[in-house]
Length: 74
Image (cartoon, rainbow, N blue to C red; front, top):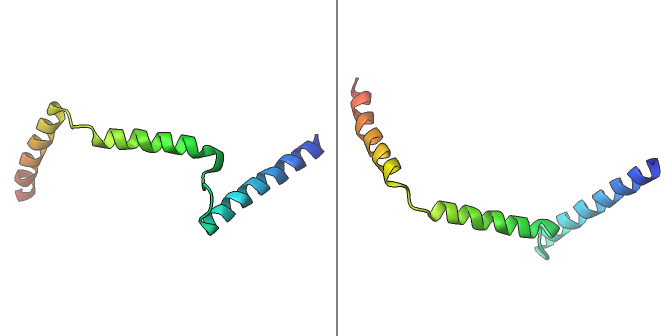
């Protein structure tokens, strides 16, 4: 069991060292096997950011902006 843990620890170090080397050299994909997850997350974020703000939220934001100057005068 200890031998297995040692091998896993060494393998993890090798993987991390390889990823760091790729980042330093600008070669390869810095995310390695997690590249697909990173691409999906970026795609999801880009879609979320590009969505329109619902009318209800836009009205609420407008109301908030109108009440803020009145509160600052007090």
